[in-house]
Image (cartoon, rainbow over all chains, first blue to last red; front, side, top):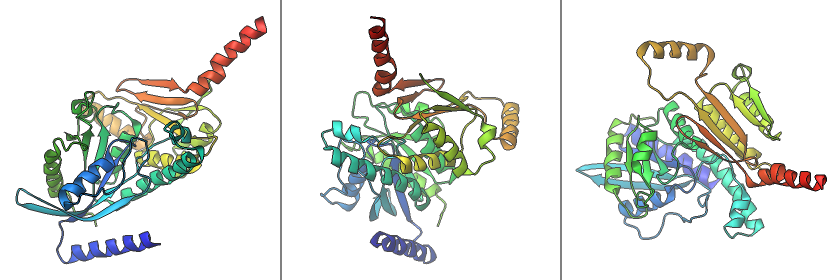
Length: 221
Length: 139
């Protein structure tokens, strides 16, 4: 109920911003498969842009740590004399399978693992629903894994169909097997930015690309 | 035994998105791998993921999906022909493979091929244990 009211208020504020000229404002979603580094990037953006020390949301090596939509409002990016204002939406990883036994193997009790699995399925459904509520998307792809994952292709296809501008971020380039080139080869039509969200490697390039994308973005709402 | 069912694209094309997804999932839930001679729209793929999540329980833990299609660049005339065919009969460039996650541990896609990795449980049940049973019977 509270979330519904929050969303309604956000939409009302956006409309007012649109009418009275604060057209720099938009909603940036971070999408991708589980464990691709979405929340790590979201935490990094909050630290850099809001100058806060505490984490936006928790991270872990166990898949589906983020199981609900998390929204951080009013992030401001000032770069190269340009200023943009956006809400950051960290989404649960999109997957086609959820197996509670994976969580049991990671050390959880069966009861907790089943609960986590239930929450994770709801999280995936929410992520897909929220595609209608974002203006721009960062697609996080784990650069150490096979990029031809159908989930990545489905996300790209859905954003294209909805005409939502997006950029592809190849994460984990700090690792030996993390190759941004591999991701660029898989998605030759699109600009791919290689970063390490964990160690802030090449993060400035991501910010530059955000500004470029913002310029190209037509007002959706 | 591995059960593979061919689902003609023309059979699901007249259905709405929900109908297409339910047709596919009903076959998958029977423990079969589905092969479709065409590609689902990405909106249908998202709907399939959503419905799969709604269906997950202790017996059914999801699906693996892979699509094989032509990545090569073609000339203008070829693109025009393909575009017209797509308008008339849907996207038939490629095949879609969908299977239950209980059987397929991973569907690893590459530009020109797909690797189907069976789950350990499926291999144990259908091959290793049946081999042991066969040997025991012969003895």
